[in-house]
Structures are given as C-alpha cells and as structure tokens.
Length: 339
Image (cartoon, rainbow, N blue to C red; front, side, top):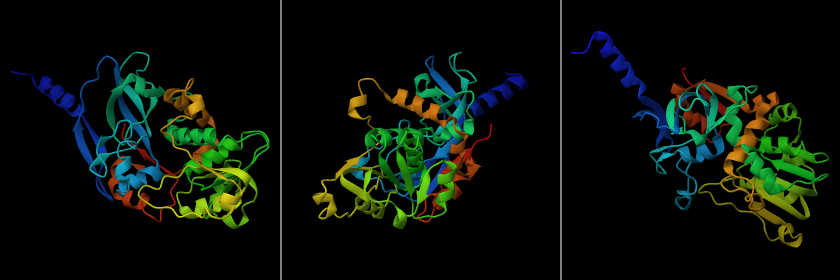
C-alpha cells in the first residue's frame, strides 16, 4: 500500500502530464481543452509557455472558418491539430522555457511555431533559443518578422528606390521598417487609419493616408488584406513597376482593374507567401536560418510598439470574437501564461 506522500507525488505527476490548449470548435467560437502529454523522448523538449502572440490576419480567417478547402493542406501550421474548418488547434507564435530536454537547452527561453497551449512536447530541433539580451515578451513577433523578411526578399527593394507599403498591420509595418533600413530607399507606410501614424513614427517610417500617398513608385508592397488596397497599389505604381501582394484573402474574391494602367504600363503583380523561400535563396537558406534571422532582428526595442494589448491565456475564448471581428484594430495581441 502506498504511503500518503507517494500518493500525493503520483497525483502531482499525473496533473503535470496534462496541458490546456485553445481550439476553434466552430467558425467564430473557441474554447480551452485539456489534453494529455507524453514524456519527452531523448531528442525532444518539454516547453512551459510564457507568452504566445496572435497573428491576427491568418488567425482571423481560421477562427471565422474562411480557409478555402483548396488550401487546407498548404495552410496547416507546423504543429496544428485537427482539420479546417473546425475543430482545429492553430497558431505559430509561442515563447516558453524548456523544462525537460537536452542539457544544452534546459531552462533556456525558446521560440516555437506552436499553437496557443500552456505546455507542450516537440522535437528539440523545433525550438530556437532567444538571444539573452532580447525580452521574451517581444519574441512573439518572430513569425511575423519572418513573414516580413520573406516579403522584402520577394520585393527586392534596391538602393534609391521609391517604395510604398500599403497596410499598417504588423506585417506591413515590419516590411516598411525593414525597407527603411536600406540606404537611400524612400519608404511610405500607407493606411486608412490615421492613428497608425504614431506607430509609423515609432518605427522611424514616414506615414500617409491613401489620398496623400506618392505616385510613380518603383515598388508597392500590399499587406492590407482588402481589395481597395490592391487597387490603390495599381494607382501608385510607376511604369514597369512591381507590386508584391502579401495579403491572404481566404475564401474572398478580389476585383481589381487590369484593363487600364496595369496593362499599358506593363506592371508586374507577384504573390509573396512565407511558406516558400524565394527560389534563388533555396540552395543556401532553409526555414531555420530564416527564423534565426527573424529573431536576431527583434532586438530593436521600438518594435514593442507592435504589441497592442495583452491578456491572460484563460481569457482567450471570450476575447477571440472581438479580436478576430471585422472591426478589430488590434496589431499583435499577446497572451500571457501562468508560470
């Protein structure tokens, strides 16, 4: 017969083998679910989540059941559970501390492309150590920075070019921020919300509303998620200029004028999506190298301006309809977890 202490230890151990995760159970509805964890294998780590970030653009489409059936496979997150449209466990901006695993990673703060969950086990190769001089809170932006990096690679802004970025969400703001680091590049961040001017100023980028956006641009990068923004991109671009489309519309149809300036000025419209590296980089780059770069670029404390709110993880189901609603003006909303 077990001693009382043995019973208590066994009970605590049993509790520690469970985790809580956020699931989209129906379009527009989410809940927290408990699930059992297996002990980590020799090449795995167990991570206790500190923070996760909500990537509002993609996650809004997932939460509202707007992922097209043709994209069910391509839009899977690395550690997604369930299937689109629902029930599905989705997300990819998790920061936590390694509680079990190889000695080199034990007690390290790491980033992982994992859904919103308070505890999880993944291969050790799936986590990246966060630089010691960078706050863990800011590291939730790593996946968005990775998307922005890919967008800049696809846009290929050159010395001295005139560039407009349409859409001052997290990804658009990061793209403008990165382009502004290139010497001689004249960057404008364009958004219909004049309150985004403060964000642009904090990032060191010139802001304007669409009616004041400069014409004859060499490159326009569109990241607003709305067809009006793409139409504006065609208006702003100069002859033989290039438009890079970073928005994902889900099941929505987009109407744009291709019969006027687009045709006569020989414009180029190119899609950019983080799921693929640009072809010319693939011989030397992989996803881990790109994500490592993204983390290294988050050392700038000005990027904290992209975090527009924070709440406890257990509030997520009640907050989600508002965060993912059509009237939301959130940038990156951060979830904090109980240690």
